[in-house]
Length: 315
Image 1 (cartoon, rainbow, N blue to C red):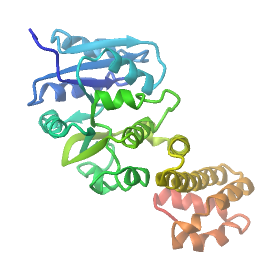
Image 2: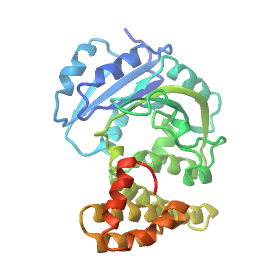
Image 3: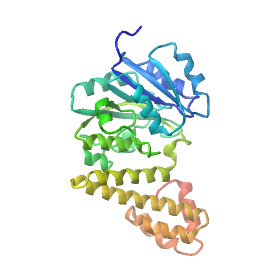
Image 4: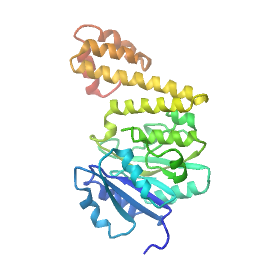
């Protein structure tokens, strides 16, 4: 029986993940670091998360929090509100910790009281990129700074370990955001003067699922635009405000290209080409620069973009 409160509270949202959350829990049980509790959130899931978690609840380190569905940010915030630990560890209900995740991450953050959070690298598994590193696809250029996070020169991986004080000071996860809520949190923590550190090792495993939230690129980019707009407003008068504005405009162009392609492929060539031009895709590559005049030729836009989609490469 536990006689002391845990140091780390692991937050595990599991909406729609009853078939996978058991693997996630097993990765928690395999941790070399012992001072943890895990709160699994069933926020009105359409599947039977409770039955999947029930076999583990005899271990008092596990808790099941059942709530109504109000989105991922709210699910995490509710679990954090009832957590006991001074450190908050994030783990989505379909991802996995490597056995030394908590040991190494806790050691890193406790070594420096000025750290608001520590993050790490990850290894992909599941539907694609199997065995590849997260950092091979999105940069993690150390040291971490507010400008580097804003510019996406350092991409913070979701299975990070956060000091509760820093998380509370930043206001937790923004319930208004349906995607990119973690990106928003990292910015808010660092802009308040907290520092962040990187443990340069793949300490978690990131499952790639075709049906995951991150698969909806347009929705994700729309949320990222909101994050940048909010950061630009908060950072007014600071040099980073200009970075937030620059990045907001860049992501808005990226979204315009995606939406333009979708319109063209859906048979709305005129509206799609107008939206594509708003995205200025010729800024992105020489291939787009060459392709844009071809797309203006009647009847060519749709087959050209369809071929691009089939090849799954940038034109």
